[in-house]
Length: 125
Length: 148
Ligand code: HEM
Image 1 (spheres, rainbow over the protein chains, first blue to last red):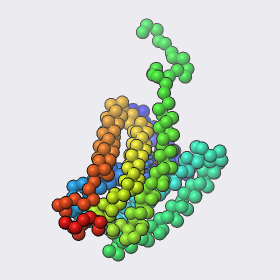
Image 2 (image 1 turned 90 degrees about the vertical axis):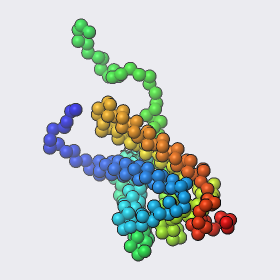
Image 3 (image 1 turned 45 degrees about the vertical axis):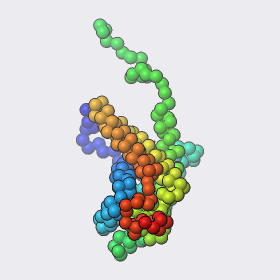
């Protein structure tokens, strides 16, 4: 297997990092979805089984993981729209950078109310 | 081969029938992405932000939603689109990083198996679901279930 020589890490700019983040969040969401379909399938077993498993999720650690997951989805979704605009909108490539800033702004605007609500449930009982 | 032959420049590595599969996969990622934005954000908003939020999640909540064909179709579409979108994304990633042919093949076999199981299981759950199972304790059920 050909290996790149050491010390040649390519440091792309925002384009490369947004691509890395899009990839990492995409994989993370996929594995979550797999587990999420399995746990939801417990409604077919019995109400008790479902409620019991959902109840075990109500811990601070899982609560923080849920917050991370929502953050990942919001980034992936808006950055996905950015990718689509770069591909199909004539001026997309020229404004890709501004659009990434837009993704960040939307991310904050949605995450703040979500975190206030979610973390007050998680830590406030 | 007796003499070393050099292939003409830009000749394909393997002769195979030319298809547009990758183009359709690329297009599908974009179309499903736009639909998923609506489906997933709606899902998160209704389940986490409306009413009691995540603390309200239990069997009765799910049963209440799936009693309506609207949410059945919503969740069905979301399941299929997200699974196919995610699977195709992972296929790209496997192609990018798994360089050995055998490894690449087995990773994809594993991926497609997991995807098929998840889609079939999820679809069956949505459509064979009974919001008022007869043997269950009444206080766990949605309020519209007939009293036992
Ligand atoms: C919420 C709305 C979503 C939007 C707008 C969206 C959009 C996109 C777009 C445009 C791509 C790029 C495809 C390409 O480069 O050809 C992509 C890749 C990907 N998406 Fe999504 N997506 C969404 C949700 C999801 C979900 C729910 C999952 C997981 C089940 C997921 C997993 C992936 C993966 C694994 C990739 C491949 C990343 C890569 O090749 O680097 N996406 N998405």
